Amino acid sequence: MNKNTITRVAAVAAAVVATVPSSSQAMIPEVSDVTMTQSATRRVTVTYRLSDAPAVVTLDIQTNANTSAAADDPGWTSIGGRNICNAQGDVWKKVSGKDTYTITWQPDQVWTDAEGEGFKIDANGARARVTAWPVDNTPNYMAVDITATGGADTQTYYPAADFVPGSVTNSLYKTTTLLMRKIMAKDVIWTIGSVAESGRNASRETPHQVKLNSNYYIGVFEVTQTQWQQVTGYNPSNFTTDQTMRPVEKVSYTDIRQGKGTVSTTASATGGVYPADPYGDSFLGLLRSKTGIDFDLPSEAQWEFAARAGNGEGYWGDGSAMRISSNKDVGLDVLGRYQYNGGKIGTNSGTDPTANCEATSGTAIVGAYLPNSWGLYDVHGNVWEWCLDWYADNITTLNGAVNTASGAYRVLRGGSWGNTAGNCRPAFRARDTPTSRNNSFGFRVACTAGLQ
Image (tube, rainbow, N blue to C red):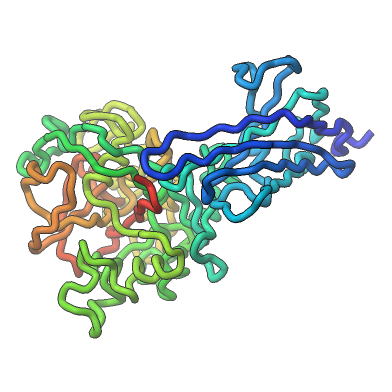
């Protein structure tokens, strides 16, 4: 018998469940009348009804050997998001306007054992779990197509990293799609800054408690050269060998928010300057026009909250303790590109790599190192990341709000390929003029996309 042949049909029954995450603002949608059937071609069809649309809908398929189990029996177990993410139809997106919604899923294409064979499930031994998410509390991951086929309301949503098609680190999310991670920050009281970390700048890192007023999405990766070019049509970067998935660099705050090169001649003196919307021909202006989503740079408080990922002073974003010695740290070695793990060439201070160097020096391909505790890559090192704020030494009175008091400099966070470990800490605050372009300056995007 050919071991690659599916010999055990993934038989499923019409076991149902409807679940709803909590929401503070939008109407809470309700799922009802879920059915699940399978045809002779093994295609599974799930139908459901939905109240209070629009809502974002996701799917899980669960199994339980106890076929008489109650709907809330904890013995029900997901078959894993990677086996479900090929489901199509009224799923993974905002839906509305129908009496009955339909999802189709071809299990024999993805749900197989180590020998490539499928599974046979006894009657009533599987169920479809359809979840409706309010539009102000959408799922943990949002994928936004930025190619010519992308547009308003074409983004897709997934409840966990396991459900993201092709895995989070797939090249798709470094080239043609922006993958965003939801950060639940609203009303969380936390401490920004540091007290005694090695490399601390006392005048810039005064620790104080802050509270952000909304949840938000932030990019899983820094914006890459391909993604920048998809939106703007040009590539300003220095490290262009292996450019497809290396971060875009040599971009200024002005380029990102106010237009290519300098502020557009048709812009006003404040055009594109936060809190004004990004100017139309800037990267962010073009991205907003393409997607209909309120993309922007993160504020520096949003950036630090996401970079820390719930880990406090003295820890890297993955929860490992800082052990900075002689400007190096073995914990940082696995988290991001910096001066001493390939950023520069040679030992000790090293020398800057040439513009045509491969990704083994200078910037690294995004996602080449390990993520922080919330699944964000390269928050330590690779390229400095522009933030919305005007720079000020003392930000203790802002309570996490964006600093809109104009000055000479904008904020940069995270360190880069050319920096020491101390400069790559979540608390470290750098600055430069808004028009400055440097081969270590890049960014990642943030947005609310309706989150409250």
